[in-house]
Image (cartoon, rainbow, N blue to C red; front, side, top):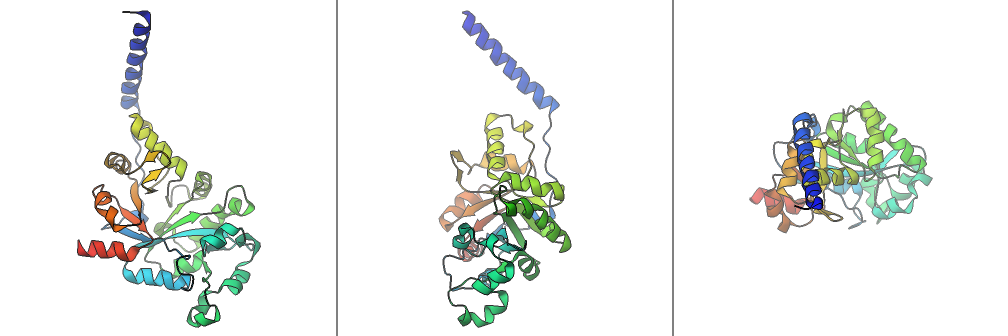
Length: 292
C-alpha cells in the first residue's frame, strides 16, 4: 500500500469519525410550530397578478380569489414616501422605482383607491392602490405571505422591517402572516424585532443552505431560520422537487409550499406531502382538489 493511499484512508476515516461524533453531539433543532401555518388541508395561496388584466381593480381580484375559497394571498410590499406600507400594485409600477417618490395619498389619486371600486369607470384600466393595513383588515381570516420588496440598501428598505413589525403588533396580526423577502438580510432585520414570534419565510440563501446541508449528509448540523419554504421547482442548479428534501424540512417543523402554474404538476407535487401551493390560477387548483 502506497503512502498516498494510506493518507487517503486516514483522511477518510477521520471524516467518518467526525461525522459520527457530530451526530452524537449535535441534535437537530426543529422550529417552534407557528399558528399561521396550521391548516387542516392542503392550502391554496393566491398570487394575484395585476398585470394580466389591469382593467380589474386589485380589490376585485382579491375578493374574487377569496370567494373561490383560497386560504390566503401573497403580498409584495413597498414603502411610500410618507412611510406607509402598500401592496405593490403591479410589476411595472413596483420595478419603476416610483413608489418611494410618492405619498400614499398621491398614489391613490394617481392609480385609484378602494373607495373608487364602485366607480371603476372613473379610473379605467388602472389598478387600485391597497395598503397592507387595508388588506389585513379586509381578510382577517386568511393567511398573508408578506414579502418585503425594497432592497435593504435603500432608505425605504432600511425602514420597512421595523415599520412592518409595528403594523403587525398594532393590528394584532402576528399569528396570521408569514414575513419573507428575496433578500435574506431583510428577514433577519425583521426578526430582530419579532424574535421568532412571527412565522418567517426562507430567503434564497436560506433555501440554498438547507439544500446543501441535506445533500451533504450533515443535515443534522443545519439550524433553520425559517418556518416556511416557499419553493420553485428549481433554484439555480438546485432541483428542489424532492421527497427526501421535503421530509428533511418536515422533521424540522418547516412547512413547504410549492409554486404551481399548471394542474399538470399537481399529482407529482402532491406525492411530496407538501403543505400547500402558491398559484396565479387558484380557480384551476381548487377545482382539481374539489374533483379529486
